[in-house]
Image (cartoon, rainbow, N blue to C red):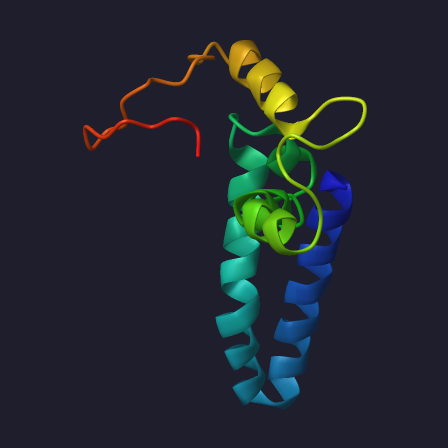
Length: 118
């Protein structure tokens, strides 16, 4: 996928530049394509997220869907305690432990209120 992105970005850039010889206003396409290319090459060069490095641009959708997952689950799918063979809470616990993060939740939240997991 990385190679496909590089080849595709070179081809798209070359086509825009070639078409701009005929119609100079075609350079405005870089207003849309340019930021996508910058994000894609940034994804290729970063070291922290393997998904983004292996799937530039498309890998960012994983983090978008992860961010809106609670809303989708709340309205359409299941709760955090449902799930086979492991619930979302159990998987989150394993992910937190694998990343070396705290795997327990405090009884008091950041505002000083008692949080009972509701």
